[in-house]
Length: 216
Length: 216
DNA sequence: GCGGAAACGGAGAGTCGGTCTCCGCTTATT
DNA sequence: AATAAGCGGAGACCGACTCTCCGTTTCCGC
Image 1 (cartoon, each protein chain N blue to C red):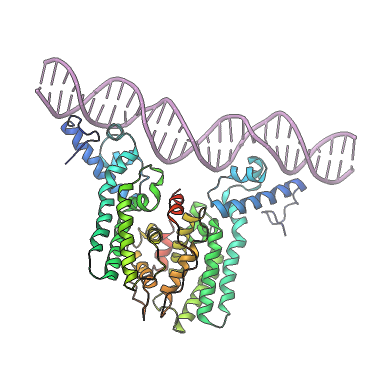
Image 2 (spheres, rainbow over the protein chains, first blue to last red):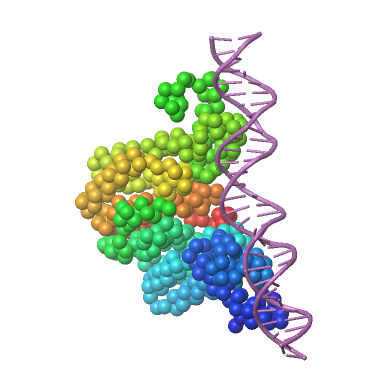
């Protein structure tokens, strides 16, 4: 389960291991809610340990980021691969699209690492994006061949669209964290080949007051 | 024409006025291309004057921002009011939508001030947004009453959608500054009440290579 | 329960990137 | 030519961050 960075170092002392777990847990929280640029001091404070302890365990931020975001990245990949085995091509595409957007909405760090090139953390999840890209491409092509997805959509559009939805969440998270649901619908309606009527939007618009408060 | 900050101060010395113009021109360039957070040192260097000169003329960044962005903001407002007098409600909406997006795409500072609350510059264009909001609302309502725009779109959606498009431009400006054209089409197709077939996207997708290079 | 290795905490050194001031020199204007 | 206005840019100042160092505390095997 809990493997220290080096493959076969002697196990950590009990308190050290405990603190390590606390650090990871705190980092997970903070990266998700505030993004990858929280300071290590913040992570340490949140974990109730000293900065020194944080730096003894993780040489730099990249190490911590990699340790923490790995499973979140993995989950997105799995979502895509699971959708790929569904029967209905459009439903598969839509389901993944929604699930991924939800994942990104909940985790700012995940957005940054997968959609924005890691924000200078020097961390890259090549492995994941090398499994993710083909899966996404598969979902797209299949839905296109079934005549349900506009044929001019290309795989590289997916991250860009997610980036756009991320911009909404970035803005609204404190006043209306679900606002993205409103705009996914809009995108899906734009992506479908034909539709008689618009799908009702899945979340209310920002009120004027919410809008003002969303301007940091 | 060239009014110094104070209503009726004695006119500036010739060289001073010249430098003031240079500073404004440089600020316009830099705010548009790199956003409101360029340093005043940068602006001064770009204008070929010393920092001291910059600070003598503009007490702080806000003053410069206000002086420089005023006309750009004004233009967006005018675009909306001009569209409002067009006959076809959908065409009016679409025309303004496209024109505004183009304005935002060309001017990063404008995006920041109008869409992102000024980025801590402390500058607010109340006047403009108090003329802009009603105009936008008018365009929306009219297109909805004509049955051409989905009825659940609300005025506050406009800045959010522009924010999303801005995220694309923010990302692609160095490798494909026109990428936004691709996604406006998608939005418009999502906003229209009914449509048989998708409108062809107005710009090519990012190639894999471009995509990689777009990750800062 | 003791001794030494391991781990801890957090003050603070070092860096960076920015804002803004100060004052000796230069230039426009009369 | 005298003088007020303006210039430039070195550097004081600031805040935010990263990471180190070492005196103190804790764990753990004997």
